[in-house]
Structure formats: structure tokens, C-alpha cells
Image (cartoon, rainbow, N blue to C red; front, side):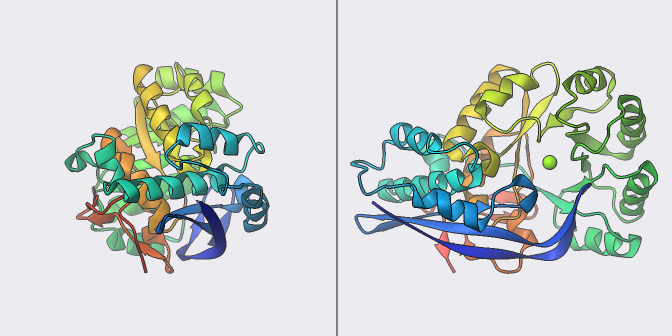
Length: 339
Ligand code: MG
């Protein structure tokens, strides 16, 4: 099996602003694995704050030798070997995991949601993110997001700015809102006051309200919060899931931080055993990585898989969003067509 890769810089439709940064592009790396005439596609999407880059991905991918793999179906052998090559590099690892899954599904002639025994009708709606911006642009973005049933906002700046964003959206829409504070609230009593203000305004849950270094404060907040708390930055990989028990009500799983579909599937299983809610999230990504995550979506409570909708230069078509709902197709593997 051969592995090749090339960089692709994702151009965002709108500047993307979270509590700590703003940017207009996301570096990505596209991976292709080819064997017996079949090509599997994968992707690493690497927002800079997570520490990976096209250069680090290239360095890591150069260390992978799939030419000695006797059987690409042996993911339980191949993926731990790749994971052990170096710490971190989770997006680069995910790119290879995704490409191998695409290849296997194509060889089997079946989409992964079918291989996993999932009913595509159970795929959830996806939220659509509206970034922090001027009231005029927020109103315009809310109108632009009309097809999506749930609006996601990034809070975690000062309370007045956060409240203004919610009130601006509520001027033009009564759709449910999910809130991602991106660790922005450092004082638990202030965080609780904000959540109590948000709860009667149609907010569904709060993602990562406090810094990951404050699990005790987060557990206190969860005891008092009228809304569920979902871990994002606090839970990266399978081994982190148990740390959410008693601290959060659920976890947000992203392929780029958990090394791909194999581990994501295991994380969902463990989260369910711990009675945790599960959300599937993404970075800004092409339809390659989004379609990969979408294969798992019938298993989860909430999905935030709008990443491909936020870019101008997708390289694939795959899973689509129809009337706000994640809509899986019957094409084998991840259901991708290269554009
Ligand atoms: Mg988040």
C-alpha cells in the first residue's frame, strides 16, 4: 500500500473568531492511500492553536511506511503502530485512519455507517456556527444560517459582549442555540450566573465552560447548572473519557484530536457505558473529514459538523446537509467523490 500527501489551505467564508483568536484560513493535509487499484482519502485539518502544521504533518507522515503492511484491513495492528511513532500529531494520525477506513469501505463495497450497523435515518441535525462579530454581521449570518435547525455560538469573552451576541441572534431567530465557551470562564460563580442567564433564552447546552485545568470548579458548576455541560478541550482521546465522569454531562468527540474513526468509535462506546451524552464536532474541514465523522453520527446526541460549509475551496463531495440534517449516501467507504 502506498501513502502520499499534499497540503491544502482551507479558505474560510468568514473570519473565524473564538475567545482567544481570529483567522481566515486553516492549514490542512490531504492523504491518499492506494492499493490494488483502490484509493482511500483522508484529511488532517490543523487550526494553529492545536500545534500541528503542514510541516509537522509532513514530517510525521514521512515516518509511516505502509508498503510493508500485508493486509490493510488489520487496523488494530496498523493504527496503534502509527500512534506509537510519536506523541501528539493527532490530526496527521487521523488523516491516515480516515484514508484507511475509506479504502476498506471501498474494498468491501459498503459505506461505514452500514458496516457499523447504523441507521442513516437516525443521523442528527447539525448545528451551524455563528462567530463573534458586529451586530449587523451576526444578524446577516443568522439569516444565512436559516436552513440549520440549531445555531452554535462561541462565547467566553466579557459578559456584556456575550449577552449582546445572544440578544442579537434572538432579535432574528428563536432556533435552539448551543454555546461553546472554549474555556473562557475562569470564575465558577460568574460562569453559573451566565448559564442561568442563558438557560431561559433557548440554550441547549454549554460546551467547555471553564479551563481544562479546573475540573473541580467544572464539577461544582455542573452540580448547580440548569444546562448540561459538554467537555471539549478536557477530553481529547479515549483515555480521557473517564475523566469526564462526574465533571461533565457529555463529551465532544472530534476526529482531529482523537486520531480518527477507530478511536472515536471506542470513545462513543465508553461514553455510553459512563452514561455520558455524546456530541460529534469538527474543525473547519473539507467534506472528506466531515463525511468520515458523519458515518458515526447516527450514534450521537448532537452533531456540530458544519466544517465543510464554512470553507470556500472544498475538494470533495460526500455527506450533505439537507434541511439541516446530516444526510449519508450509499457510496462505499466514506461516500466521497473527489471534485
Ligand atoms: Mg468546542
